[in-house]
Image: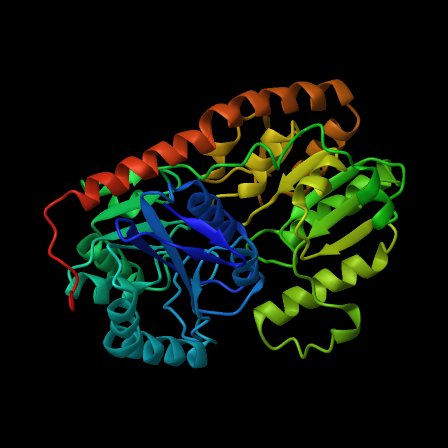
Length: 419
């Protein structure tokens, strides 16, 4: 069993070490989903250790929760998802990713695997191909978690290479939605396990008074967007739709949680699509200082949801949206883009509304419809609660992961290299 000792943990010899590899820098859905997964493990059977590639708020959060960590080690993976992939104007990122991937495969990953001697490696994204290949060559079983859909890229070469790596090296492929698992649909290794929400944190009875006072929120209708300043998550189209909402409901507030560049740092030359995008976003925000409230990278998302009337996710590319299922637990209606896999998370016209991501007029109409109809908001919120607490149960996820680990570890696998 495991015993706590200050900020450390003492493990018994019979426990199997699970080495989790996390890639990201921010405190988004992937690290939070991993945190909930690790917390739900039986620490009588398993010893979780999380390797962080980068220093971040996520790394601090795991340490705060007394979960053993390694790193941050400062090496990059080879990202190629719809949320982040290397465009033609990213040659420096491509070169760095290739060099770091090669060094990780030959030196970094084997060194850490030999030191930690894990019984199983759990990769938290598709782009950790060097870590997967190294574990495979060292005969360590691999659970490969697919938390984002792969990007198509320009010619499909990178997508096909990552798809082949995952299919070849993984012992089991875990996708968080049917859409994310599409590249491996024909593989017997594929298992769909939806992300889950801790119900004790996302409680619809959560008090909102302190949060409203902290951000000096007006006594008005409020929309919450958890996505910061992101092209892929649809910040700019949402702002355009919100401007139309203000013409009919001028006191409405839009709360934006997540990273946002400051106005004073808006010195962009506008040579790249990303810099032009940020400049456009900041110009719209500047026009509505009282209506657009920038919350920053807050940790207390449940409080922000409790203080809001509608949760929105206007993504321009389809990917799993944790705020949607969290909103369900909070009994809040949602409006999301009509894209896969968002259509797996929202029942259109029942738990929320699915709107074409490129239609600002339709988004404005949907926002006004729900903002002016309290009964519809209540009924959709209740339907969302019933749907999400059934489909995205933490207990169900825990049982599936526990069974998965048990099946892999009792299988006929070679001992890790160096044992």
